[in-house]
Image 1 (tube, rainbow, N blue to C red):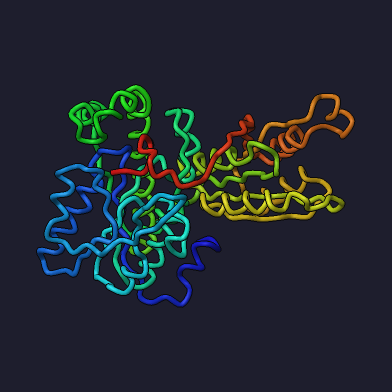
Image 2 (cartoon, one colour):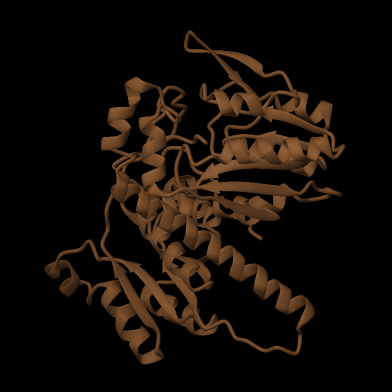
Length: 390
């Protein structure tokens, strides 16, 4: 458990249970599945209330809300426009046994509450002992969003840290074939008619939907394997297995490092491996890039990596020494940004030195090309294509 996750759990007993309906794209039926479960629980006598549901004008979704208590939303004026957001305090005061809260990745309108993100609201509700059922699309997961952007051509501004989803007691995939999704789009069951042509030719292209579905299936498969390992550890202590892979990603404050961290996270996740992020401080260097480093450190925490900072005048040796101590099997580096002449003057690039040291230690090295991608984080209430919807 990382530092940011721990702060939500200190001195909290009991915490509510957390269930997530995961989808590959808008329109697969996540909100409908969430509401169906809410209705079933309500019919069995459970105290269920809707904290926030966005129907997007879909009649079937709106019909499912009938008969369930809806906690009033909070109206907020922002830049001359009126928005409605979930009223966190009203949910806490009502304190239902189960709260249905749509769109986990949503960015709250500034001034609507104490948190910038809905997932932060959800964690506070869970810590108050309220069960939460929520929805999210796979592209909004922090470690995956960076890979989705070049596939779909859509900027993913709203993101959920990996550790938030991994805290869930249960994740259920709401699946739909690309063909079925495109048919639903054509029939007007996902977006208004005026947005359908653009959606079908951009985000909802068949190849995009196939890729997103594959990402969701792989993520869910990883979660299922993790549950099995936890079961073996709890009940089958005589069964022995070993963790075969451990990853290290070297972090510097150069452009493109965010993409390298996310790439390393995905590589580690595929083999259920631990991920260590290491930053080397030179003794004689200033810390003028501390703000950038703080952002990279938080990103590492968000994707589930352990963070370490080391003081050393020999970064390559420090990385190899750390890798040996932690029994690292795979090192991930960003490609060198220095020219050949600069490398000769300084005795060779760190990438080359690490590669030589890793070869001697029997450690594999992955060198990732640096691609600097600009992200604009903000509230985009009218941007529906590729946004967090059900």
